[in-house]
Length: 257
Image 1 (cartoon, rainbow, N blue to C red):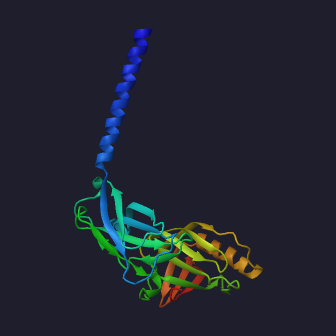
Image 2 (cartoon, helix red, strand yellow):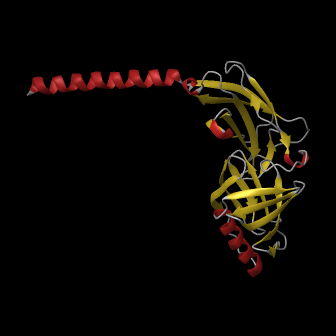
């Protein structure tokens, strides 16, 4: 029995060494895309700012964008330029496919402070990348679904209201992240865009501030509209969220505040 126990121990040691070797081999396969993020204006980032950097494949079928890697890095008071190392598996990169890197700076409330006006192509992942982001309120106004500040005009045909002292109801879609306000509480979550007209929003989280009755009703209707959205249409400077053929909510392009 003593010999058997010794054999078991040796076997366990060998298996442990094998697992360690496999783990090391997997770790060795992980590479890093390095670079820095900065902006041109003279202003300081808030201490709670978070830098997010994403590696995207833009050669997927149907024109969709697939995220291969994402880094969320609290700045903790550091200022630009902000260095980053974005880990990724090189085996995920396919020959003759196109890849891009995108960066955003957000605060703890989920509001986008700065964002890449356009993703930067990755030509050789061994070369450092410099990303210059732009303050959202300075971004050129263009009626594009993403990276645009959409102010709520009406939901279910009812004109938008704002709780006194709070921010207007709005929606901002950027890099798979939906942020906004109901006119009372902040809203944040995910969204998915497929093709040119298919859009889903949610699930969503929100802050828990008490709202006056009419704004509380608007918040409930707006969240329902988001969760029932299956598509969208842009008409000039207006965004219509659609559930089938029905217009659930209407927004207008607005300068970022």
